[in-house]
Image (cartoon, rainbow, N blue to C red; front, side, top):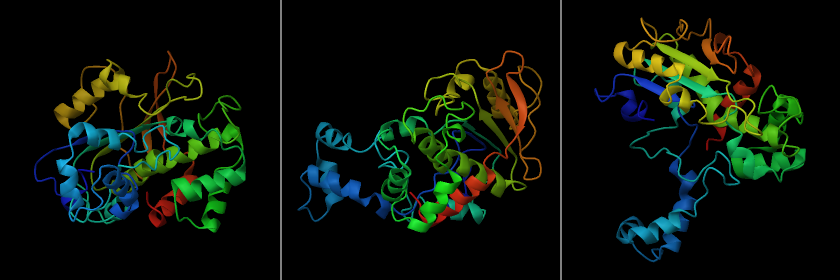
Length: 310
């Protein structure tokens, strides 16, 4: 989000970005989160105050924290549509990030960005009670993307079908189906929040700034979660191969260079869409892949979140 604030002018505060689990979040205006603020105001005893924000500032820390901790979090039924997302306020973010990105008002600095293959699994664990296509559609329209039309949701359901082998954890067949719709939901939530924003960002910035991308497909044997959100952290900060790329990137603004481990990492372009792919393989732990999976699905999700941001 710091690459978007101030209309993309970093004012020298940073010279590059190393982003794990995607890029911008497809959010809308602060009114999308107003109900959470109103609830905190009410439960903190500030409803009758003329200045509710100033009233909250006077609430003792422990009391305020207790109220805030009731807000929907990572493991809530809402999945990726969380309570305290950064939203457009007219100051820090002047318009939805996806529009600003399309207009090129993004900090022009070198970027490394990547995702894990199964980003959505963790956020779908609380929705295992959903077992039918009708319930799947209702969940999307009422909880994940409130306000989305019935027609749009019907189309969305065709892109993310009721067929567990096409769901997340990907490439695991019928395995990891906690419930009938779990893998379907996990695939969609991962694409909404992580995969689609990452790809959209890379394509929009291709030719404007140096960019490198990766996809982590490790830990595929992790039951029900696969290559879950955050599973790439150990590869960077736990002495994995990506740590060497990070050191070189910080030093030279290029993940390639002499010393350390790794294969040559080509820049991301719309023509090649080359990414490094980390795998569960002792022979080929890293390979060059192409960022062309679920192309039509993500294109539809892009347009959908433009219409119905979080």
